[in-house]
Image (cartoon, rainbow, N blue to C red; front, side, top):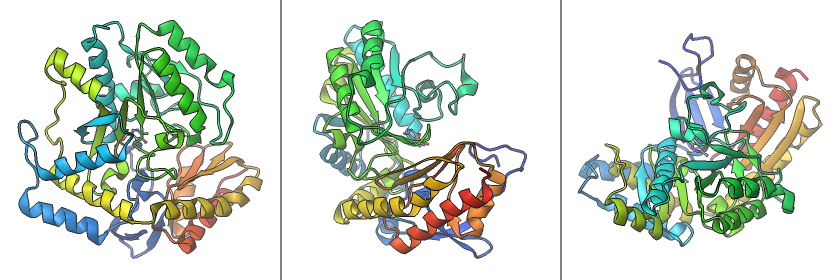
Length: 415
Ligand code: PMP
């Protein structure tokens, strides 16, 4: 096997996991790890949840999968209805995808096809911000930061997009005119070439775990309106409560024209993502071209849709705001001591996301086993040691996770 973002030479440690329950992963050797990663933002309710298990089982007894072309089914209908109800009002159409990367592919294709439908065939490029991450397939890679980002290896073969600076850091930072001046200049310069602005609202995830202000996002929305360019919000990591609002766009009170969802959509159970758009986009494409040209084999998988419906219902019935606020308080308190370490550049927390940024990349061969020895699952990346735990984690377990993060940085990562 060849694992994600990994060498195939078997030179990195792998930890066989045989079961998972609540916030704990059980390893083959019997050890239990408290999971600080929620399986990369997805397992917001923890593992092996009776309500989610039951949703999959019940759906399995009627239909595991059926093609979505020309057919529809209740789990997809119910899920689409919930997504339209929960997301900002202008988002009225739902297109299902099978992973986050594909949801971004779909969003980019929608934006391009919409501009073509309007006769604006020169609008073939995207503007995005540096420091972003949108997935691993070709179109999303092209809107990830090409310099020093995860996909810099692909420079020269990806479609060339237009990059504005990283949004200024700080969730609470007041907006200054200079913060969006470059973006405004780029929009003015390239207005006839640009189909959409694409970004991760409020939190840039895998590209650097940075936070920016809702005021910045509001200004981006205004600029998109001013230049008649679409706004695509990639909420694949931030969606379903992670930042303290149901969607990161809600902090700013704005709606994008296209929104991508994934990860926590199914509570981390099955692979499913969605791209939502306005009626205007869907209708313009349909009028001009008859169809939106995308249709993967496993689109709208009933098992995945059923568990997504159950996950959303579970979330909305839970005190998720209080839980995320408790995670935020616990992460702030627990990670604070790291700010005093000489090897640490920054400590930041927003909602259920806690980040220690180091001056230098970690040595995974030392740091990863050190977490496991401390009974905690944290998967650092580059200079970032970060946690986004399941919302159901207790204060006691969270304290173990944050103590391990501070301790491992101090003990295993030289200043
Ligand atoms: N966009 C964002 C913001 C993400 O965090 C990710 C996953 N890390 C993706 C897109 C890609 O999603 P997937 O891994 O499901 O393809």
